[in-house]
Length: 140
Image (cartoon, rainbow, N blue to C red; front, side, top):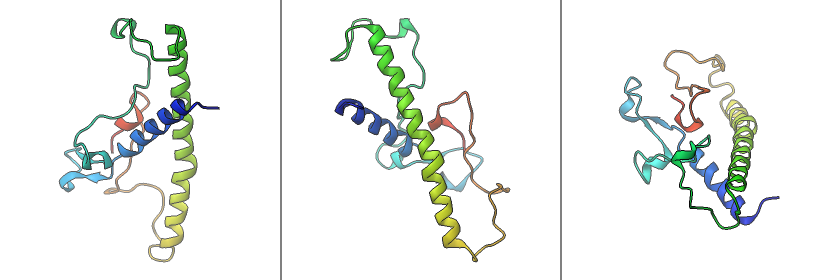
């Protein structure tokens, strides 16, 4: 079970991921690689989210420990648990929510364009998965 603070953190991280997903290209230019995201309506160009890996020891403030932590080890364990929960939420989003949107769109548009299929074609906007980048930084 999650504490209230852990739940609030998880929801904030999921919110950051959803709000940083690309909606469309700005000025209709695919070659410029500049996209419009939901967060851009509130804070244009904002970088949101949490790091997806631990920072090097020399980059951390050695004096700060959040309330409820007794050691660096406990803090790092909490960070790892947070990343695990965020990954689970992301996987659920990909596996269930996005599939349900696709199924719903197929039901709505059935018969309007029966030639349309899931394989991307030139001119389609897609999100490119890159293992070495955080989810919010994948290219469109």
